[in-house]
Amino acid sequence: NKYHNKIKIILDKRLRERSHGELEGKPKNDFYTSKDIHQIYVKPHLGEDYLDIKIRVEEFLKEILESKFEDVLIVSHGGTIRTILHILFDIDPEIAWSKQTPVSNTAFFILEIKEDERKIVLQNCTEHLKYLEELKEAK
Image (cartoon, rainbow, N blue to C red; front, side, top):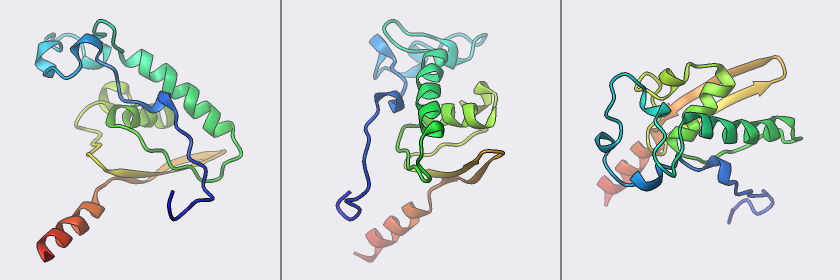
């Protein structure tokens, strides 16, 4: 915000990453053991499953889509981004939360939402990381 001080920053807890409750920080293999159920439907004690995330992200998106904002920058986490893609583009949640829908660390997406059209203009872009690597190599 240092260089764009006329832009309003709004913090919203609904954009947080999935809570794994008491299993937070433990390896996925410790709690995603069933091959019969996708990991997104597992609800750890005091944590969230996919439905919990979807409800809070849907509320957030509804407010944004009904707002008067023309351009919105959303900064969030992989699971929340996958949920946004599922909701806005009707991607099956199991596909949205799989390697078929890559969401790399620090990647950005450009989504164009109009009244009658929604499209993904840029998906999972990490080109900025190449620039950082070039700066490191130059030193």
